Image (cartoon, rainbow, N blue to C red):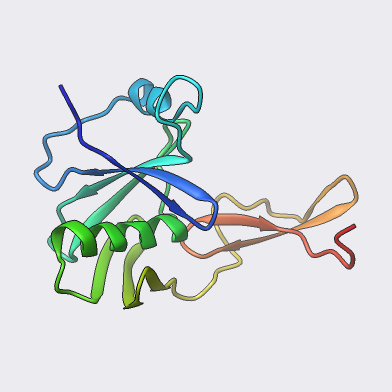
Length: 158
C-alpha cells in the first residue's frame, strides 16, 4: 500500500505527518521505527497521524520514533495546524486539535506562524521521579506541558 505523507519541521523537531482522517491507515511499531529511521527510512523524531475527532478539528495521534505513544508534542501540534491550514481547512485561522493531553487551541497569526495555548504547566506527572535527580552534577527539574520534560538551569553555558 502507498501512503502519502508530508515531512514537516518545527523548531528543530521533524515529523512524518500522515492524513488518516478516514482511519484506513494502521502502522505497526516495526513500521513506525523503520519510517523514522534516519538511515533506512524517511527519518523523523516521530509520526503524526491526523485522525478524526468528535471534539475538535482532528485528533493528533503522535508516535515517537521508537514506536511508543506520546501524549502530544508542542512543535508537532503546530505542524498539525499548518497541515490543516494548507490542505484541509484552508479558510480557518483558528484550530482545535485533540491530543492525549487534551484539546489544544492553535491560532494562525500570519505567514507560517502558529501559536499554541499549551495550558498550565504541571510539576507533577506519573513519569517524574519522586525525588530530584542529579546527572553529572546537574540538578534535573521536571515539568509537563502536555508531555514530560527534564530541564536543567545553568549559570554559564560554557
